[in-house]
Structure formats: C-alpha cells, structure tokens
Length: 139
Length: 329
Image (tube, rainbow over all chains, first blue to last red; front, side):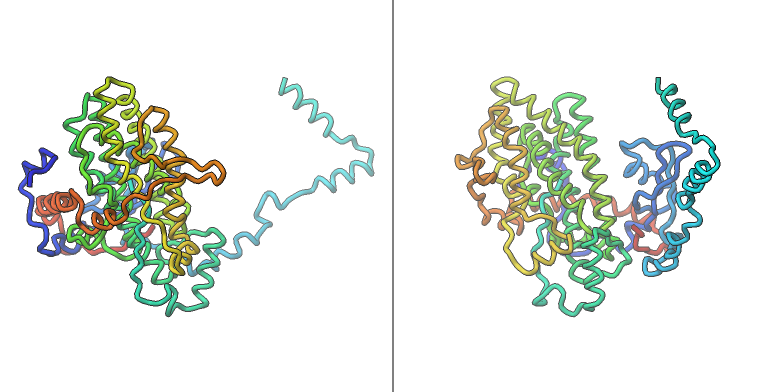
C-alpha cells in the first residue's frame, strides 16, 4: 500500500500481526522519582516519575518531561526503590498533631485580660494611637 | 489529545462490586464523597483499578499515536516558526504519553506490557487518529478542534478521584492551552487568507466533522455499571455532556469565521440550551475502532517499527541487577 506520509513510504514497515511481545520485561528500565525546584532557595517538590537505565539518563528524561516550559532551577532524581515512605494506613501516627494546640501561636490570646486590667486601673488603651499611626503610614 | 474514556465494560460479574468487602467499600466510597484523592497504595475495588488502568492506558496510547498524523507534517509545515511550533506540540504529546503511562503504572501494569498491548492491537486509542491528515488544513483543524475536545475531556477528568491521573492531567492541560491557540491561529490564518487557503481549511473541516462528532464517544447506555463508575469519579461526565460542552464553546467560533459545518441540522435549541445535530455514523465508529479505519494498520506498524529499531539501544542499557519498582505517585 502507498501511504500518504512520504516518510512512512521510505520505511520498511514490519508485518503487523505475529502477536509476539516485542518489548521485553524491564526493557523500559527502572523508575526514578523526580523532584523539581522552581527557583533557587525554594523547596524541591515531587512532580512524577521517569524510566531510565541510570541516574544520568533519568536526569535527561526528567529535564524533557518536567523541566519543559515551566521555570526550573534544579532537578533531583531518586530511584523509586530507594524511597522509604510511611503508609497511608498508619495515618493514626499523625493524629495528635492538630490536637496539640499549645504549640500554635493562634492558641494564645491575652488581650481580654489586658483590656480588663487597663479599665480597672485607668490605663489608656493604645488602640486609638495605633490606629492613627496606621493612617499616617497609609498617607 | 484524547476523547472520552472508551469504557466498554467487559467485567463478567453481574455487578462491579461483586466479591468486595462491604466495610472497605463503604469507607472507600465515603472518601470519594468527601473529595479525597485515592493514592496508589490505598485499598480500592478491583473494578476501580481495572477501569482506571484501561482508561489511563488508552489515554497514553492516544497521545503517542496522536503524535503520528501531525508528526508527518513537521517537514512540510509552511514556514520556520510553524515547524518549530509543530515540533514542540508533537513533543508535548509524546511527553503526555510518558506522564500517563507512569500514572497507569502506579496501578500495577508495567509500561512494557502496555506498549506490547498497543502494538498487538489489544489496547485501544482514540479513534480519530485512524484517519489521515491529508493537507496542512487537516493539521490546523486537528490542532484546534481535536485538541479543544481533548481539553474539555481532560479538564473534566482532572477532577476525578485517582490522584496520579489527576496530577498528570493538570500538567497536560496547561500545555494543551498552547496547542489550542496554535491550532486556532492556523485555522484563522487560512480562513482569512486567499480563496485557495479558505478552500483548504473548509475541506479539512468537512472531512473532520464526523470524527470530531465521534470524538467523545457514543451516547452512554444507562446502566448500573456507568452509575457506579460515575459515583467512584472514574467517569466524570457522560459522553453526550462532553459533546454538548464542546459544541457550545466551538461551533460559534467556527461560524465566526464563516466556515460551513457539514450538518444542516446543527443548531442550538434556545429553549433547552442543548445543541441539536445529526447523529454521526456510529457503525463507522465501531468499524474503525475495531481496526477498519484508513490508518489503523499503518499507525501500529510505525509504532512497531520504532520499538524494534530502538530495541538494541534499550537492551544494551539493561543491567542484570535492575529490578522493577512500581512508581510511588
């Protein structure tokens, strides 16, 4: 058959239907996890994976797949098999994190006590003063 | 570039949830209702895994095969800037294939077996790529309208429930926006050019209208299977809903250029807000998807040729101590 694509006509295309597995197992090599840093000084963030025969090729593949278009300062690749991760099933190990509110700045408020003390002892509230300062700054 | 998932449900069981642990299933469904993403190592029903593998794999194959009809035009693209842009687009599509294969792999099917299944015709890909890009006008219509259809599908699916697929789609969509602009620019250039240029793009539109109408797949049969897949956020909209969104956004833009869409019945019903159209030939769709299109054979032969030609390089780099690890995310 004559194809529309001139390039295809120049190729000697193989028979189509012998059904054999033409890609061997591991022919696409190992997987590497890719970490992308947008700007110097920022965190490296996991963006996906590539297949590669060695770390150098992994970096090259990562550059093509993840350093394309978006701003990039730096890339890391790490063999997937080298990553140790927590299990989502073990979510309970993080459960106390939001409970320990004494570690949060937002859990501390003492203005009510200060106001009450100021009222009782005739100390002027600096709120008005602060408001004026702010106005000056805006101007 | 991809239409809607060709979810042809061949699960033999009467129900997709047959044999699943009811407690785990309830927890799983509750997570999806809460809008949580499912990650590779989480528990998931077998049918969820199978449908997603099939869908993401088909999507990946579509990107790889979709690069072929446009790739053949790189050497013939008019002008240096268009050659560069088309090369970038084709390289994007192949890159999308890589991202999607990775996402499918997290579900447990190796990349090698996906490529083997593509080449041996066991896996499907989007039907439109079994048609040839006869002229430069065709590549303009493909880049604009096929990519537009794909964006509608991909944006919708990026709200789905499987984390790795959603993340891949978000990245893909941001690149597709360039394809759409590039395609539109090409169509507008031809449509506002000489009489010959207008004819070129009008002919291409006429040729591609039926494949475009096929793009989002045949109307879904209402079934229990479809309902479950929509509940699991595997399928995010019906094929007809996607088609309506496409028509609503792009038909006016085509008409803006004074081009003729070869369907005299195409119009928006103002009272229902729905587009009315002549159903495309769904028998033709089935025939082409099952291997009877003008380019099916050539597309797979080219893939096979490329894999066979490159095999010695890949095999030379294999090391006996290498072992496969399912990617993390």
